[in-house]
Amino acid sequence: MTAPHDTNGRTRREFLALSGATAGVASLGMAAWADNKVEIDVETISNTDHSTDVLVIGGGMAGLFAAVKAHDAGARTMIVSKGRLGSSGLTPFGKGFFVFDPETESGTIDDFVDTVSRSALGTNNAVYTRQLAEHSLDRARELRDWGFFDQTLANRPFMKPIEERDIPLLERVVVTHLIKEGGRIAGAAGFRLDAEEVVTIRAKSVILCTGAGGFKPSGFPVCDLTHDGTVMAYEIGAKVTGKEWNDGHSTRAENPAACFDGWGDMFERTPSTNGVEVHHDLGVDMNYRAYKLGNPVEGGPGAKQPEDEIAGGPFVPEEFQRSFPPPGGEGPPPSGKGGAPGGPPPGFGAGANVGGASAGMAIHKSEGLVPHDDRCASNVPGLYAAGDALGSHMAGGIYTQIGSSLAGSAVQGAIAGEAAAGYADGVEAPMITDARLEQIKDEILAPLRREAGYGPAWVTQTLQGIMIPNFVLYIKKAPMMQAALAYVEELRDHHAPMLRAANMHELRLAFETRNMILSAEMKLRASLMRTESRGSHFRLDYPEVDDENWRAWINIYRGPDGAMELEKQPFGTWPA
Image (cartoon, rainbow, N blue to C red; front, top):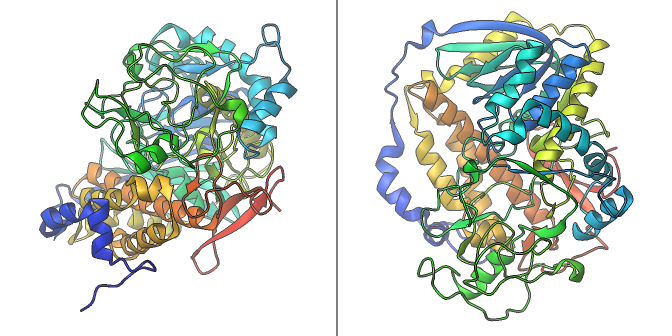
């Protein structure tokens, strides 16, 4: 039988060889499909049922403020988190918190919004950019009162306002389903990691603070984030945006899994605040340089870095082109310096590796649920999102304002909390039938009941081999993306439905793997649709910015037949 070819004459086997996945398939193929040696009695798994007005899913910065502000607005509030409050997701990594203080800034908020818009090439939503500046100082003051800026870890400062308000907190619960009844949100369901228990929460409104996600790469602490909230919301009809953008965080050549910024361990630092400092950073400049010249860290730390000038590559506005110390120079770039084409972004020295450390993640706040107003609401009544789960395009499709990620999560969490509490006050408690809850339980436990199937670790490794290569995810062109999409569709249709799990830990991996597959499909389809290069999205076959056709965001939604559909939303507008 002849292997199928893509439009460039490349066979699937050749594509996998290029992506590095062939070795994984060859060595693990026999172990991919196996009998499911279940370690627990699935039929004795218990059920717990909770109810609340506002359910906050996620325990990071956005989740903290969403819960506090919803409670303070008079709503019964509950937090559910896959990890520990303040200790999972990307919150422990963030150490910079942007504050716009009118007393110390030389420019106005209007100046700030305009500068971000110029750097972002119009991709930012100016309404959410303005909110960041208007509310960041108040959020920083609250965090200071809770002790956030006094210690390296966030759990204790986060617990202070939660315990003071006696807000119920369920930790280490994996939420797998959002429940919609009567055309509006009705709650969520999932399971405990440390107990054989399915958890159901009935809620009048839900706020997704589930963060972004990636393909479990090495080098950036995003491995417990797999776009869970985005996929759950997509499956009940929410629109998703921003999947074509890429985050360009790098890591060092040696010990790439260590979370290290070039001058120290991020987890050993205490957080601090910073003012206006707009850059054009963490795009794919380094990836393009590596694509043209080879790996810039070949030979390890101290090796001479390529200094050749290269033509083409991602467009950086002249206003934001900045200089760096020469290769091998000591210390970080001076304040205000960052984002030069071919140079390392702020926080990374000349020996940093190229991108891939955060593979599968977009620029903070640029992907997630489509906001339908300035209050973090989605198109599903009662469903809100905040932080990296909301595609607010607060900073645009490129990293603009330093420290805006943590600050934006705090600001949006507070806004969403108040909005969700207001919504919950005007609706009746949802009704979910026993038959619907039993159906959801069966869907949750399906990988445990499967007699044989694919191991989630093997499917994840296969997906990584397809999606993480520089020439697929970062330096894009249609033939490679089309070839990758064919593989992702195969995983979606014939592997995700047959994932197995032997215990509650593997059950988590099964759902995370499925979510990553759907996210990969979204990224490829959005990247194929955007036939231009802008911000952190770069295509070799469409290398120029196309303002005539592409001053628009791309939204993704589930069509009536279940297929993935895409649409344009012009910059500066709200969805119809």
